[in-house]
Amino acid sequence: DAKTTQPTSMDCAEGRAANLPCNHSTISGNEYVYWYRQIHSQGPQYIIHGLKNNETNEMASLIITEDRKSSTLILPHATLRDTAVYYCIVRTQNTGGFKTIFGAGTRLFVKA
Amino acid sequence: DAGVTQSPTHLIKTRGQQVTLRCSPKSGHDTVSWYQQALGQGPQFIFQYYEEEERQRGNFPDRFSGHQFPNYSSELNVNALLLGDSALYLCASSFLVWGGTYNEQFFGPGTRLTVL
Image (cartoon, rainbow over all chains, first blue to last red; front, side, top):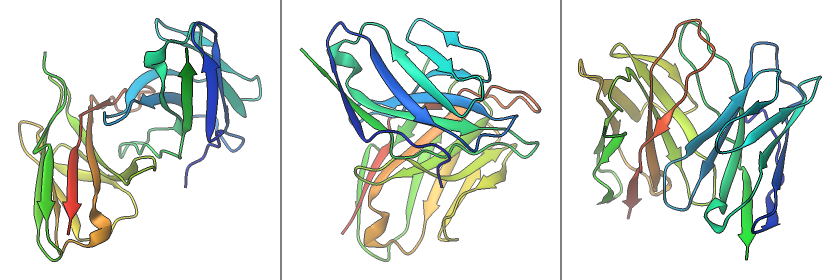
């Protein structure tokens, strides 16, 4: 089972910030938070990841609460092309490799 | 630089048949993972291959098997196909850093399997 819970869907106006929440209350100390997105009929695309600190890259920002039980992905200026399913994942790696367990994700609709 | 490639793009089979799907990882990657994605659901982890061995496995029956070749490419085999095996099959590659903290996965476009 996925270790994260996300809203089923969200709307955002084009040009505004999209804030996608994720709950991962059972996260353990060595698990990272990863975000991927999947645009219709394509494979998932990596967005960003983090452990404790907030992270920012050219695509998005990731805000992780101090207790690490939740996080928020921020798309600062959403465009129509950001319409996709966004997956929040927690994952660790042991000496035997790693698993990526996806939940149902949040379907983000960016509207003009 | 080619990313992750998968073949074929689409496939139609009948119940009871066997199918083989293929994946070539991104250049420089040594680890391949396979996922099954049913319509409207998130991808479900099938298994992961590294150094030609299955390293991790999800909750899939033995009908699902795989192989990794010395050039890091991989195959997914499904025997005795069921209607419920109809799905998008995704391959993802990464470079495994043992004890590392970050393993970005690059996904291929998938193979759409329809079982009639």
